[in-house]
Image (tube, rainbow, N blue to C red; front, top):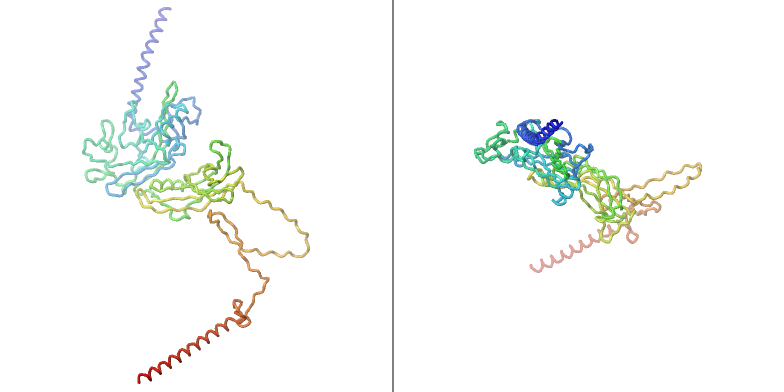
Amino acid sequence: MKKLIRICCVIMLMAALVTPVYAAEKALTAAADGEKKADEPSSQDEGEILTTGADDSEEPGQNPLPFELEAPKYVFADIVSAEEGAQEINVAFSKNEDMKAFFGLDKEAKDITVRSVGIMTLNASAQIDWAIDDPEAWHADTAWDTDGKNAKGDKIVGDWAYVGIALDGNRQQSVRIFPEFGNPKSKDNKAWNGSGSIKGWKDILPADVLKEYGDTYYVDWTEHTLYIRVRYYIFTIDNDEGVARNTYITKWSETVAVGKDAETYAPYAMESDIPVPTISNLVVDSSDDTIGTVFTFDAAVPADFEKNALRTEVYGGIGHLVYCVRLHQDGEWKVCYTDAVSQTVVVPMKDVLGENEVYNEGDAVEVYAFLWIDQYDGINGSWIGSMGGAYSDTLAYGIKEPDITPEPTPEPSGEPTPTPTAEPTKEGKNPDDKKQNNPIPTETVSDDKEKEVCPVCHLDIDPQFFGFCMFYWIGGAVVLLIIIVIIVKAIQRKRDEETDILFR
């Protein structure tokens, strides 16, 4: 029995010694495999969110992050300069409202928000993958699934791998890729030549896409097409005893192209081209004691305008959903702006109240909206101009339709009832809001009084001064004028005769 116990103790001791060694060997093997498999395709080309190391007890679909994580909805790519030898590309990608709000916080607020969901640290970045001429010849591989780093945290990809791009709090973010390659003969040019096992541009780019320019090379985008896609990479360490490490990677965005034969951006040319937003569900809510009374409405912005509004921001312009608000039916219209995206717009009532103006529950609220855009024709381009689209329908709250009392139906008399003649009306617009349609009746002339007609000229426009036809007055004036001319001529002739006798 004692011998059996000794054998069990020896086995347990050996297992305790071997386990850490095996774990360390496995970690090193994984890091080595990450470097060896750097040329293999990424494991996250398809699918929604790739999650590694997450707690298995998590409910499916539950998001442990302090924001909704999804791939960029919009990606734009533009050539920065058309000069020979220039190859730099500007890539812009969008963020959803959750991500924009979180990354717009300062460090302290971010830390508080992250810890409130049980996370100790959170690192977020974007990755930009690219391909030339072949839209399937991507460069992301398994090394990108660890943000281009090995188990020790050392970078194992070159400058051509656009990983680890820090995120900011803007609705969209721009990054420049494909900078000048520099002198390929310089030993310090690690971006071109690489370093150790890390490949450089010369190892990645095929020779047939390069052109010589001075003492360097470049890619001529008039002869080649660049394809771009973007995704988000999140790494977290949980704030628990297990200190679990989790990785969250979105799927890739839709592919965009720039360069040869790529579709180019076309700005709006006419106001009639700008779509009309749809607004609905106007609600007034007084339940929040902190904010006070608010009103909300749903705004639906067509996807093409949302995309073009973001695109013009890349160039220096801006796009807005403009909504106009009026209180109490007789108040002034106030103009407000928000992002040109489909959303529920929440407006504190205090933000639209005028000086000494008070809103009481049940008071009238009216809202309408339109889309507005300020445009440029490209990166470092010229200003095209600003324009706004047509107005949406007006939403009204707290305005009751007037009660209409039905008139009793008259007893049939056997005689036909004459059909009333409708008076013409014209559509007018309130000068304050340029929107409210008010039917304005056109003045009509009564036919009860007969018009007076001159018995001489038979015109109803004859003023008949002192009871005489205006043509009598005109004739008298003509005769008087002729008499005056005759008298003047006679006087002038007599003076000429006297002057002639004096000089004889």
